[in-house]
Image (cartoon, rainbow, N blue to C red; front, side, top):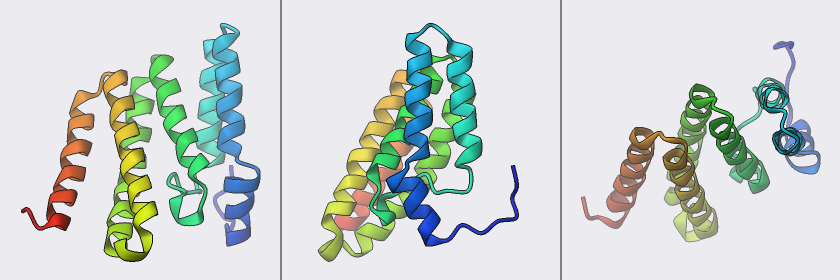
Length: 157
């Protein structure tokens, strides 16, 4: 896959909203799991990671929360297929983006309360997937960092 192309806002809107590629790959992966073809399911998830590698994992700033749900679904699928390292890596990368977004929306809480709360819901969803997948250490780290942010924001530090 080429790296020398520019992704403008129109591509973000097309490939993250109108035609969510992650949704298509996740749907195919789930279908292969259901059909008893785990290797093909893994292939779909890997292709999703490759095809979408230059697109953000966290779509809240663009208004595409379905994108975030597909990232979380891919984490769950990777765990269910025994691909713990890939699931952990994707989860850590997603958390980095989600945390940055959470901090941003917190700074503008008065006008962005809904987005901040959405970040909180997605954080808890991520923690649940990490725990279910067997990565208690990362789940605890995410929870601790998120809770520290909430305490700092409320002045309880």
